[in-house]
Image (cartoon, rainbow over all chains, first blue to last red; front, side, top):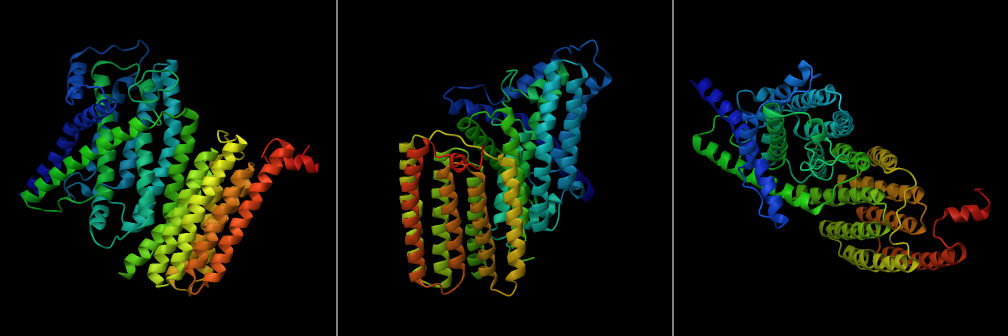
Length: 318
Length: 220
């Protein structure tokens, strides 16, 4: 019986991230529009877009291989599983033993790998450019992400997200420089990985600058719907990851009563809303970077992660 | 309570190291000066916190000097000089930022290793302040080495001096007279450098110190 409840909560978490992801994208778009003094589309617009895309036919290039057709589902599955592993409203779920930070990075990395392959599959020049740029960004963002994980693992004594979150709530954390540096680096990596503004503009189809859009240019219909949903889920994943590690208050512990779960849900919603509005605010205040400056930006993230790890060694208790 | 005192001191000194890195990253003179002002403000905060923790009221004077001279007077007058020289829009880049950052990381690691070994017996608060201070000094030197523009070299020199003050406040029992004389010698050095900047500019039509190398016949 207890197992059934645990499984139900885990299932609820999986459904929750899937259902909330388009809403989060809608909120970010709406907030950006309001900040630019436009009215903007309804926050439900991403759902309508997905429904419209699912109804449409798929147009395939003549030389598209099987990889081109399965890649959207692979990318979506990898991102969804990764997002479902991050504790959103409760820690200690049934599958939380597998919610390891390194496993999540690996899942996201394999999703990115298939997307880059699919971008090159049809042989158009845009797909190739997008894939090569995506790999450039990824090869810089992943070491930075791993440095952040090392910092967190050294401080919390675990790479499992549930234990990290539990450690962060406890009073043993204190005020630490390393954590601040890790937060800054994680935000920079999240911006780069989600193709947000200083790195890539999610709302453009300009040849010179697009990265993510260039890779998915050849997709249509339900394949495009899967990729759009995967991108939304990835954004949600990064915001929940930051929330779960750095603002873990309100997370319901293992085997909590329904009231605690309700508090967890409410605080999770509040954190997502805050994260989305902050992202929109940041994107409105900053200009898009040249592609050649991206290594500088991510190098700074790597540097922050490395500095965090180094400073950890002169911290109070080790 | 001691844990909080330690953590705050750690945070402020670590922030100083971080701002030193931001100084290395800047390639525009005006933003370099703004970040330098932030550097000095953080130093003032760190010194004031040390005064609070060590119960040493004379350190408040040091903090006030740091805030008044280094965070306000020097950046404002340097900005004035830069605008009068007409180089406030210049972008300089000698060595790539990536390489400089890597070198900086190496220096930070080096200072941690040296200090943790050399001062293993010392009070942890003083030891860590010393480690951070050494890192700030080395990063200031790195900034001076990697820049060609005389104004950015001055900023490197000033940030190096901030590291020295941080080291001095970490150690207990630094007399106020020494502090004040160091602060004034920095001010004099700043005035002399300011005059020299204009002399260099008059003579070579640039503040790029490579012109000096060329003049000495070292670089053809």
